[in-house]
View 1 (cartoon, one colour):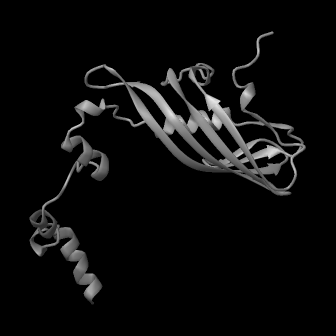
View 2 (view 1 turned 90 degrees about the horizontal axis):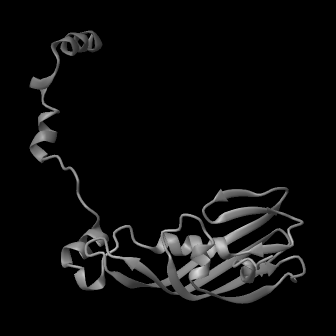
Length: 182
């Protein structure tokens, strides 16, 4: 039986003392190949995990650095996208698995091993920009769009004032206003 490519990302949590612990992992293409439908095929780097264990929960602080190979949406050329990710994950001990939030997970108390590969993969996937542009093709307009977003619709001040004037009031509402004033 072949060894799982995710096995090196396991942390044995059952025997850990109630204290802070450090773990270092390295990843390559095998991490991305292990997840079906991954948009990332190639990459390499390292992840440093600080785990603070208490009786009721664990706090994991991730520092992921490296690069992934992306394909430019404009030129279809490949380029390396640098990763520098800082994320925190809270894992609570409970009766069964549950994902309470993006960064809060519940695992059964009797769990012996915690595999952090899924979390590292997700942090990397979320860090990849929606619009993948080769660094040589990025323009000022692209940078402004990334920072400020894009304005899709705007009403003019004249349109807004026109809606509040008395002349646009439906005559049926005008008749009802007379009853209210009595």
